[in-house]
Amino acid sequence: MKSKKGKVGSSSKPRRRKVKLAVRVQYGALPYRFSQDAALEILLVTTRGTRRWIVPKGWLIRGLRPAKSAAREAFEEAGVTGRIGPKPIGVFAYDKLRDEAGGTTMCEVKVYPLLVKRQSHVWPESHQRTTQWVEPSRAIAMIKEAGLKKIVAAFAKRAAAAASRAAF
Image 1 (cartoon, one colour):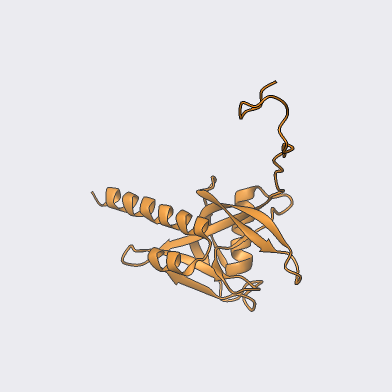
Image 2 (spheres, helix red, strand yellow; image 1 turned 30 degrees about the vertical axis):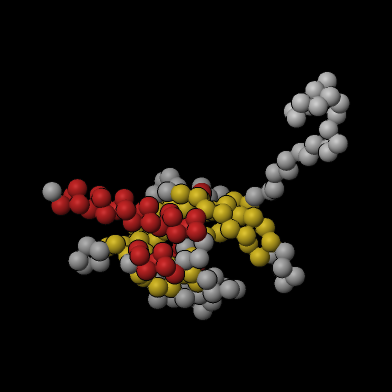
């Protein structure tokens, strides 16, 4: 019997099965609004632990669909409410720190657009997080996760294209 390298017999290296790592799924919201001069603004929030800039996100909430879970997380983490899109605009992955020993879990975040109608002065995690409204290019510069940067950039590009079509 010939192996892939053309030699007769079996290969000296045992074949390794690809092991698929378990990925946990979270749901996030990309809160946005338009300023009085119609400029797109993105709301970022800091993580509680490392204080990185991200979008509100979390686990699926029992009894809620993914988009509604994302909207609830946006209220709990950033104090915003509004109209959540029914379909995700993108997905990004990151390593979530599980414990002080440095254990991590790979998480995939499905991101839904959230057109913000109202922002509260106080919300459940207001003393644990900082929020900031910024223009898309500034948001992209502040975010560390490459996948989330791409989602924000693509969203801003689509919003700009839609705004220019609406102007004509």
